[in-house]
Length: 428
Image 1 (cartoon, rainbow, N blue to C red):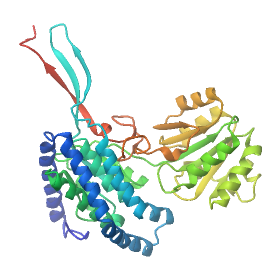
Image 2 (cartoon, helix red, strand yellow; image 1 turned 90 degrees about the vertical axis):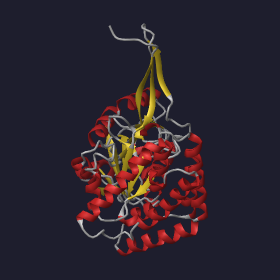
Image 3 (cartoon, helix red, strand yellow; image 1 turned 30 degrees about the vertical axis):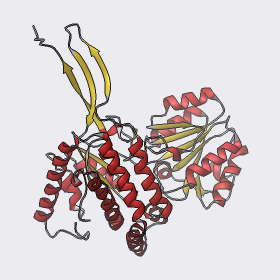
Image 4 (cartoon, rainbow, N blue to C red; image 1 turned 180 degrees about the vertical axis):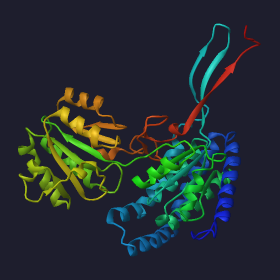
């Protein structure tokens, strides 16, 4: 492990990455024979190590926070980076929650007999070696490493340079758990440098990495999708919407929007756009605007919304497509449910979108026709989270269509193979 600086030259970096890949591939093969109890023990011991290392984790995080503040990092990004005692405890609890999940490896997805007597099973198996590239949030180190281990995969983690010290300290706890359970330490590894060229190396390691999972800003995702020679499970930006229907409960609408936007503005499930039926806007929107404004949120609205409150800033066309990750929301009045659905499908990122309504027919139409990985009725978009889905944690929210969609947890980190048993059959 280096101190996070460049490894010196391209050859040294390449050699270091190949060493990581070789070790991960060997660890992955070893994990195939590891029972669930051993993986669970490693996770629980890692949780213990995190709790025992609270002071060390806070000190490492303080280094990252100081550097980020000196660089003028935005408030929402600082919030993503920050490790409080509560968040450290949540990391430890997350590892324990993952340990409690059923082990997906070896589970039988389907089975059936054939007329010739063959018995066929479709059985879950690990994906292999997973490369995770992420930014800002150091807790991803714990979540990603734990989810990969639980699902029998080896992990190569490349966190953001801004969280290098925090992630390194967390990695030590994960590897302490592996040692305590007598599992290969190389089952969870971290790229030992902040050199951005390491990302390029990872994206070409077709003999060592089976799947790439990027988690971060739009530019990172686009780079990975454009350059990777390895299949990608993409976590795109979260331009999430809340639509307030004409049949919405006014108090519920305010509570949901306030939470969806302001609970944590820097997460991918934060609402970035509010749509509201034009017929109920004069009655409901002033209260919603007032609640958001008092909470410190900037509102950018269309002409009709501006006319209701002088605090509303005029929205541009760009606002409808923007993931702010900040205390800003765009507001647009629409002519009913169909226009809301059309707007979301055109401007959203297919991540998470919600409707607030007491009209069950309208809700079902929204849930069916909005083309997003997660759709909600009368609930905050901030529930877009693997832990909230009972999955222990997540590597990210997949907005693609192949293999996994929505929260990517242990089950989504497996594939399958067919196991066929016979008693001497030959094909005529």
